[in-house]
Length: 134
Image 1 (cartoon, one colour):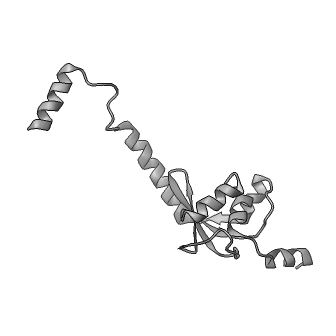
Image 2 (cartoon, rainbow, N blue to C red; image 1 turned 60 degrees about the horizontal axis):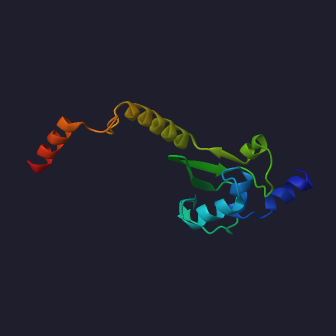
Image 3 (cartoon, rainbow, N blue to C red; image 1 turned 90 degrees about the vertical axis):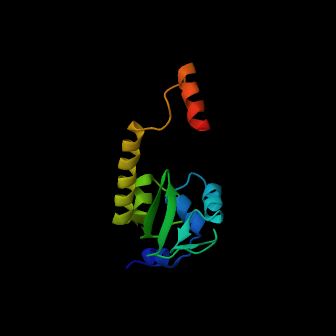
């Protein structure tokens, strides 16, 4: 193993800095705020933004409507291209399956939305009032 690779694996990187470098958050301040608010979990527990990241650690973080669970594969504190950033982690298969399942459920529920298309007319309003009073 070369010295640069050895030095890279022994360096300490803050959690918020790693999340920013891995392109999970657009700014480091946003990454820090998400960690402080408890939305990001490190090995199943709340963590502080300054916590050093270790290779092999499991990180759970929000991703839109769902949560991603990723394993840390490499450390880096500089933000790089998206293809290099994706080499820093791997998403667990259980996380991928759960997100796909949730996406299918959201697509199915879109067709059966409980929200009406428009405002009720006079007859419908009277039926709603009758229903509420009975």
